[in-house]
Length: 313
Ligand code: RIB
Ligand code: CA
Image (cartoon, rainbow, N blue to C red; front, side, top):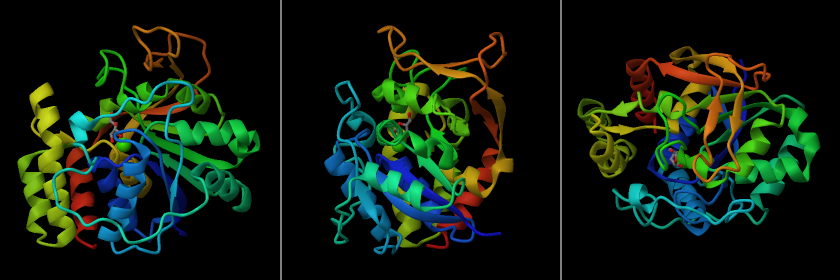
């Protein structure tokens, strides 16, 4: 079976980095057509740099990295240095990238790629705020029908919010973009906090990364050592939730995940609940289902896959 062609849209972020590494370590299942950076965890100047750092860490200086939107569609950028550190990749000491950033804007790359590839053959994998995806959909509505699937990390329902009491960060940063994406009609699979908070990098799991004793394995362990402190303190959890790798793991082993095809709407008006993913988990409305909202994962299977693949780099 041919590998799935994907575009990773990302705001690295340590967990984004692991998601990208997992994709690049899995060429039999995933062909990364390009990586588009968006402002999110840290400003765009850092997310586009960090995306290139990760590609070089994986030995993929051939990968095309594009810079996208540096702010949400209509709101002020909110960043998350308190979680990811001032560089966005705090933890390991990593060299500045040498590989070039592409000249093309990320939104143009997304549009051009979806128009150039056969319809239904490209999957979009947003790992940060949905600004790039939404701007592409607004500028080129014809691409909505050409998207194979959008597999995104974002939102929360039973797990509630991580940046406000009701909103998850990626959706909260650009709720207007999220509303556009969730309303575009393309097949959508959502990895919300309900799932990602079950993907905890416990000490044994992080020790397994370090025990690979490879530059990538040790770097992933060092990223997690830094990244976990915020969530362990806030939630008293057993380790950092590896949010974004749930997206690329789903492409490789969907059987690790379970959820429901339901209606998900985005709050874009109320200041109190801005960015909330209103997931009709119990189907109490007649609103049409528009997304497969994941609720559970096989965490041991997830980490076995992740460790085996990271070992390949
Ligand atoms: O809320 C978690 C999400 O926000 C992850 O994608 C993390 O990288 C940040 O972007
Ligand atoms: Ca992210």
